[in-house]
Length: 342
Image 1 (cartoon, helix red, strand yellow):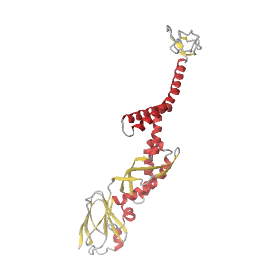
Image 2 (tube, one colour):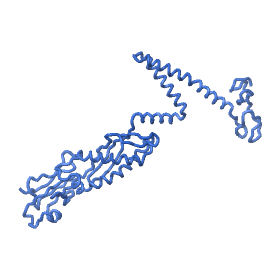
Image 3 (cartoon, helix red, strand yellow):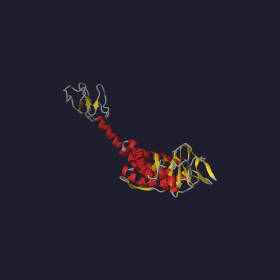
Image 4 (cartoon, one colour):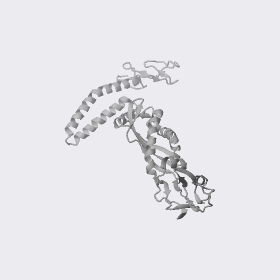
């Protein structure tokens, strides 16, 4: 029985390749219907031959030149012939996922060797039907996007480690490097895709995550950067630890005794730290108090104890304390620095 109409409709939306099962022989004059976002490829003796774009086509020797030369069609269409017809989807598949099954090793400039996990999404489509059919799908009757997704994922991960080492110096730079890494990795794997007739349309990195201990180091450094002063950050950490211990002791649970002990230990530590902190604060206050006053005429700095401005020679209107050298405003009865009578 000769087939009169050859067509295929993908009900799942996930098939990339589908082999038409004729149940008989094809004949010149039969109708080939290629839907939008499809190609139809005639396949014979392990080779992809004539390719048809979207539309309705009447099979003739004119539009089957490669197949005609292979099997010989000199009979004016009177003799049926055998050939496989493969339909290929040309639509973009936007929800493909990639990710590292196991952490990949990364030589960090600041932390030495770090193991990282990464994952993201990408979009791809078939760009050239013949290379894809010849090298990937072959004679498979049905080839879904899930079948090739695993291979593409492994291909991306294989290139990921190289790109990571070439683009990134330290995991501390990760937040600002995602777009740069994604663009570099997309460019690296695009050639691997194209040799199989595939196009990598979009590529995104959702996350690159270091181990928990490295993440804690990153968080600590971020906290110190936000505080600005490392000493202030340490004081904040100590105070918070003491507050957490006190809260745990107040719960009255089984661990309250241990928490209370921890609170005492933290308190003792703070007791040893606070005098030094207060001394630093006092020194800072004394330094500020002994700082130079401003000249009322030219606003230049006037050293403590000076009676005339060294810049313009004007008489200084501000007196200075004989005890601590702090500036004493006009009319003040006591030194604001040490409390001595002015």
